[in-house]
Image 1 (cartoon, rainbow, N blue to C red):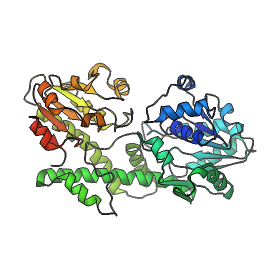
Image 2: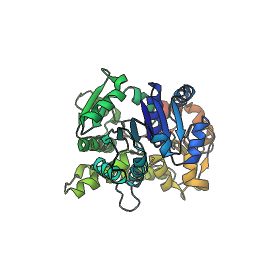
Image 3: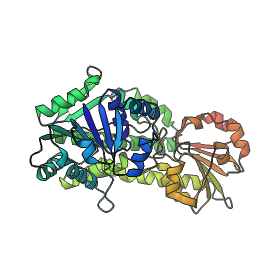
Image 4: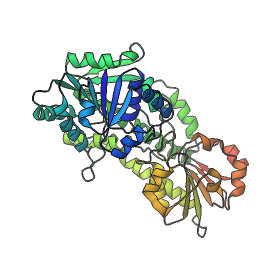
Length: 431
């Protein structure tokens, strides 16, 4: 099959590489000429574990190509996947649909044969109807169907999730579209659940899923606060909760709050959509406000450790919103550092996300080239991202480099006893 993917970001590029690996002829389209030129030269424009190797293989097999031309990409395609951004609108905070609608209008004239337009971007309920209307108005002769094909790829694990999906959800209102999408995902037959639902149901599933997971994170963070006051240990509590199959272990890691390109945006969009329909989603609203407060609380916790130190230096381990990615969008680390600036000299290290953080902070903080530089002469060090490299730090050596030995483990990656044996004044989450 010929597959066109509009957008080469954290969804579009891994999806394109994955589909190309199955033997499809995939062409990725993006308006950003610099990004396309880099990809044509074999340079990835984002970091995902394992992506470079498969990218190279599919390009060399001539199954994956890149263009800035919508005409070149869409002409003759069996499926066109829309994977452009739907960021929060700067004023309304609703999902900004300008890129989706612009893409639909631009691709419409090039639809000649029957084509399925698949919305893989996270879009509000009713977007499929709007895209259908735009294409029909622009090209009344077009033979097409619009389906909802939500993505469930975790950043940092996008390739793994592509090849090992726990479900494939398709919102299709026609038998013809169902058959074509079934053919596209034929390699997964018998390996996962393929759920066909109404288009509006599919559009809701992604928002409902992300909002639920965000609430789960906020809940365990509130339980961590309770444990700190009551004398319980959140790790033990989470372990006991997770053994209940109705709850499960995932997303029960207490920390500095959730972030990234999905949870903050999607919870806000879900709440705003609910308001439009006159539905009060109080749990989601409380989660949004609680998560905002959580990041400020963590910053205050860090500052309290150095409040009596003149000209304090604070080291930060981690800038990405989670390990395995270079993405700093809505990162708890970025939010926390923003609260620290002006109260201390900040030195931060991240194995992948430094360049993205530099675009945000510029010269307001110092960027370390290695972990040792974070601890050198620091008065406090805070762990804000759970990178595997951090778990293997020699704690005794790290403590010996510091001026004041304050370690704030806001991701609970170090055993308490090990940290205290290394002479740290140690704080973690939830105990």
